[in-house]
Image (tube, rainbow, N blue to C red; front, side, top):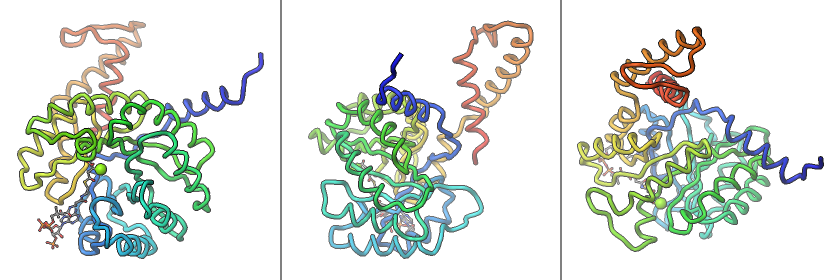
Length: 318
Ligand SMILES: CC(C)(COP(=O)(O)OP(=O)(O)OC[C@H]1O[C@@H](n2cnc3c(N)ncnc32)[C@H](O)[C@@H]1OP(=O)(O)O)[C@@H](O)C(=O)NCCC(=O)NCCSC(=O)C[C@H](O)C(=O)O
Ligand SMILES: [Mg+2]
């Protein structure tokens, strides 16, 4: 039987996607305006899982060059040691601007690079292909970069499955690998011509579609930003809602949001207790050769065992 190159590449790319290592948590994805050195220094004291030095919407148009240069000099001092593992990313400007190529070149061709590039406004696979071709010319080492993809327009939702598939395929011949999707709810609202209500019911479909698709491609799903940054009670409610929907983390814009968000994306003690007992019971039943069994009145088989394993994995983060 002759198997075409494309088929082989697709199989390999699916294999790569589904066997990816997800040990890097991104519960709080914390934005720091790239032109503000004071905020940049502060962000490394906050214990956030993921720090994003921003060239895009947190930076005024006339400060774009300052942000790029500030980020570059900061990166060239080496990744700060904060006593724990964390993800250090740079969000470049979107590919429909005059800034993105210089942003990308500037943060990729130095001695030290970020762990992750965050790519906003990915409306279609052409955007990804252009990014991939350009990034490949700037990356001069073998170290693989993470790629986080922003879904923030009607078009990007219509093309979502193709975007995820293409990201996997392109990563086979590139030095980056897709690790997460971000729901850019504010750009999404602007794009479809709506404003947000308190319960966010108008974006529920998109919010759920993103998390569902991310999980189908074994990508992390990062929930929308809560812009009323002084309303910490509202933030807690929205963060817990995102966690219940299946999101793995949330965008954060202010230091006070970090602990609330990181807590919300940890399992509760009741969940950990449930999962621990279930896994113990699963081991016993496996030894007796039983695939399905009763645990606290519920029928348990592999899907529920996997949910319990996810809870235990997450609970080990702080
Ligand atoms: C929202 C802010 C402009 C508020 O800033 P500020 O007035 O300085 O707040 P505070 O005085 O309360 O700050 C207290 C201290 O904390 C530091 N700080 C504040 N914000 C940050 C931060 N993001 N990172 C690090 N440190 C921060 C202040 O400097 C104070 O420190 P000190 O002086 O030492 O006491 C501001 O929070 C801010 O700019 N936030 C980021 C905004 C941003 O990045 N927006 C874009 C991302 S959201 C997005 O892109 C959505 C998505 O794409 C979509 O489409 O939905
Ligand atoms: Mg946006």
